Image (cartoon, rainbow, N blue to C red; front, side, top):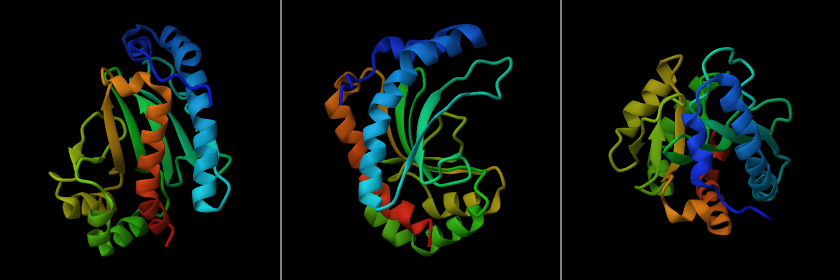
Amino acid sequence: MNFEGFAQNDFDTFKIEGLAERMEAIQERIQPKFRTIGEPLTEDLAMMLGNEMHLHIARHARRTVNPPNDTWLAICNNKRGYKQHPHFQIGLYDDHLFIWLAFIYELPNKQKIASTFLDHMDDIVKTVPNDYVVSMDHMKKDKESMEEIDLHAALERFRNVKKAEFLIGRHIASNDPIIKDGQALYEVVKDTFETLLPLYTLSYK
């Protein structure tokens, strides 16, 4: 793997004005790195799970005016798309990198997954470290640590509110030295995904 990590220039992409200009920078600066780190991670996940996984790199195709505030890769078990399936993500905002196991509002069986998680909440708390974070909306930077969050209330909201989401994982600040160390960052991402595998498996029960 020839992944060298992310540079400040990658995060500065989100300060570029204009949709076309920012998209060009995303495509030139970030997406090649997503492919470099994403392909071996996809293979790792396939081996851990014992079934085929597929890499998707966000295209932001629906955008016509406003440039994206973040960009990401997604890995899931479906070749055609990821939004309607539980999926793993790595992505960048202007000030941090996120590593998620993501359950977003397009999931057709969102209520069932939420109910399963509520039934196994004690197992989730034991599985996920306190410094991992949870987001209820992939469009926002807002997050709470596992230590702080009312997990029961969050999962109930995920189940009951149509647009509510559940993303769980890690945030790493853009100025953290590990961001620039490709191998070390890869290991952190792989470790995060491995830690969250029980939740991913649980979501299919």
